[in-house]
Image (tube, rainbow, N blue to C red; front, side):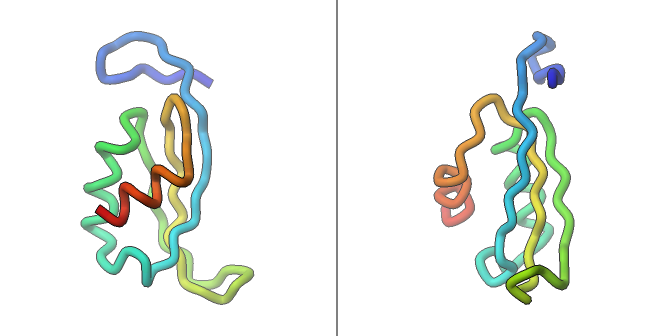
Length: 78
């Protein structure tokens, strides 16, 4: 999959989905705004009430050239 970056070049982006527990974030609007910087290729953030673990979670679908779940969690904590 390719998507144009902000610089206009054709960079290969990886699409991936991460689920973040609502208790980990706290504020949906801050989550969405903060992640625009983390995912330069674009994001889609949705809220899911029910999951397999029965915990409300945010579903993040992001485009980034090297997805890394550990760095995403670190980014959200900052």
